[in-house]
Length: 61
Image 1 (cartoon, rainbow, N blue to C red):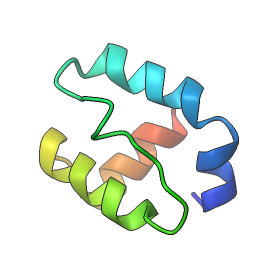
Image 2: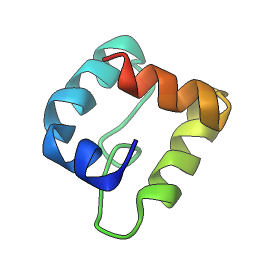
Image 3: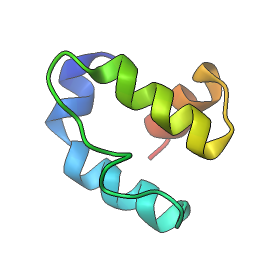
Image 4: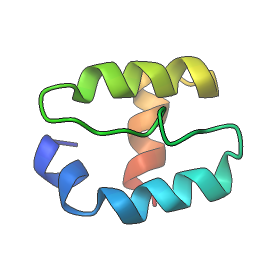
């Protein structure tokens, strides 16, 4: 998963993640250029998922 893949349809993916995981906030899902790893780290902590699990989850949306 690269930055272009995330950035291209992030609003759609963000909505799906919020539906699936009610505990996620807009702050958790804020994507800023150059801070992809920081955002994914926050999601890992919030959801209790490994990096690989999180990548598969986002790719499967």
